[in-house]
Image (tube, rainbow, N blue to C red; front, side, top):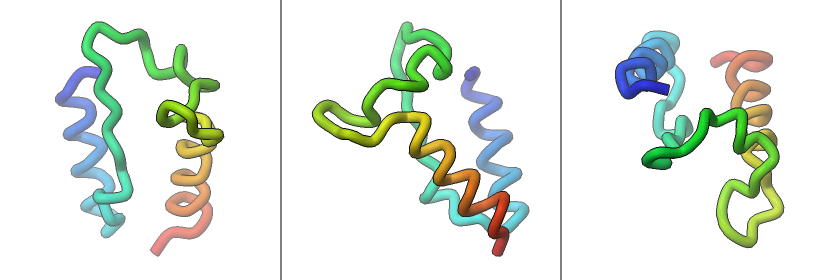
Length: 66
């Protein structure tokens, strides 16, 4: 996503008193859209997929708001 959209998301999280330290930014210069990485490991050698981290974040902050 463009950098301004990342900033917009961070502001929205802060407005809802969600700890933005939990919101990680993955920047891949020249990379594809994040959905192209949906099933990739979150880090080299990790069993955790990008999808898993996104779903966990949404579960924690949408299903169980502060």
